[in-house]
Amino acid sequence: MNTKVTPRPIPRPTQASQPFWDGAKKKELWLQYDPVSRRYQFWPRICSVRTGKLNLKWQKTSGKGTVYSYTDTYVPTPGFADKAPYLVGLIELDEGVRIIGNIINVKAEDVKIGMKVKVTWEKLSDDINYFAFEPAK
Image 1 (cartoon, helix red, strand yellow):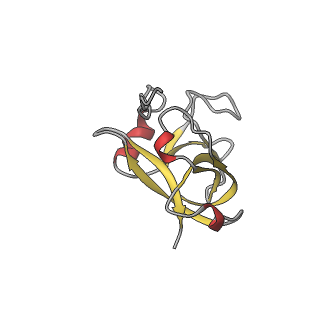
Image 2 (tube, rainbow, N blue to C red):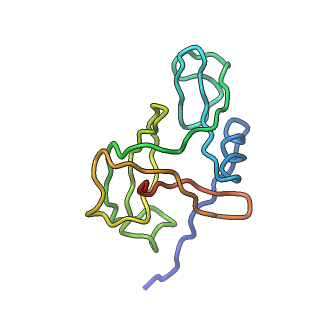
């Protein structure tokens, strides 16, 4: 029997994503904002997904939102075996963009569509904090 546990992958910042990870290190959720379309986007990219322009600005968000959808994950992806079962949610931030993240510090039966959540952080290394969401009080 193979009992080797796969460690959780550590994200590797790119030129496009470095400002996101710089904010995460300070436990702040920064996203790209397109001033032409007046919309945020996530994952970080070189250009706007709406206009194709290279005009994106980084802005700090509130980190608050609501659960748009979620799933209770029983078959973990590599590096998450010790967390299974765990919740993955599609969160609609107050700024209007949806992002996928783990939902933590709550039982699966207590999660509801429309539930208010806020960003929280998991320290993966000295340089990387990774976002997750928890119920807003």
